[in-house]
Image (cartoon, rainbow, N blue to C red; front, side, top):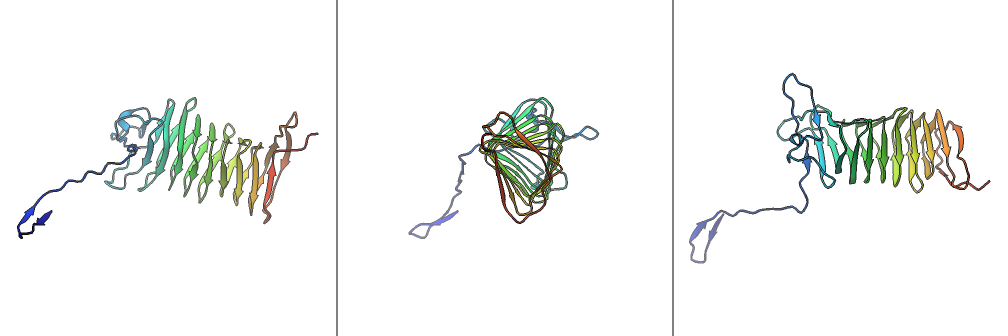
Length: 262
């Protein structure tokens, strides 16, 4: 920087400005694969993270392809022991889909920052994923759930995303509102706890069992088909269960779990 004083004398000086953020830096997946070896790595290996540390419950985790230097980290990210994060964000800026696998018998606990999938990100859950914040699944992202997926603040399944809940899978909307704008292939169980809302806004649930202890909203062309709807009322000793097939309707329907006592 060049400055001029009142006498016309000039002086050149270097000014260094340090900008310090108030938040912790995100923890970014950087695992690479040696030629001829299997791809991916373990979440629990600190060498696979840019910070050199394994993410904790206070960390924002980023699992993406690197658009800045052309490096595509190796996938999948495999969780083989209980793992934690404040938030998890996955995105693809190249041509290799980010992939996260939670193995059977272990858990991934995500805090209030939520779960955010973009582009063609893929999550395969064989264990337990608990999300305290919103679960936002966009673009062509996919979830294949064969374990338990607990959504404590709801979220949204939108765009061209694919949600598959296998025969051993359970998707539990334990709080908030889950907006569904896509089709869910359900061979397992989808549960809506008391106080939570499942809103089918043009989306469909095909097959399996849907258990409502909270609120089910069908808006526009929301469809339930080829499965079992179980409505649980606390004023009764047993759940009321019925077979259902619902077709598109322009009428918004709201089904609540509170039934009159028999």
